[in-house]
Amino acid sequence: MAKTDRIEIKCPQCGHNEFEHPENLQENDFVKCDNCHFEIMLTDLKEVGFEQAKDVAIPEMKAEAEKLVKNLFKGFK
Ligand SMILES: [Zn+2]
Image (cartoon, rainbow, N blue to C red):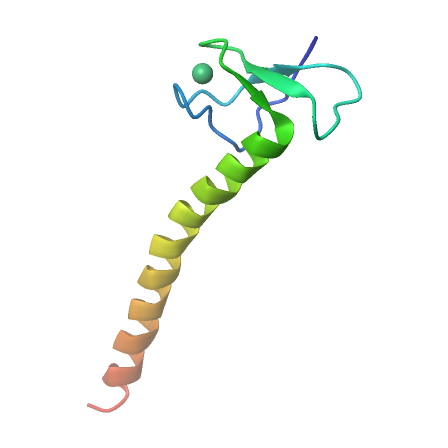
């Protein structure tokens, strides 16, 4: 088992982001959380990571959009 070099996906169980995985990791291989030993298939973990990325990206986009709108109104003063 190799250890990941800190990936941007968090363990759905404990929020840890280091996973053990076999060499030559394939989509249908299981990775294991280094902290709570929760096992998840790589494809499912990627799915989780995508959901997590969405949760992070959306508030950021909203903040950016709000800034943009504020600047727009400043111009009309
Ligand atoms: Zn975990």
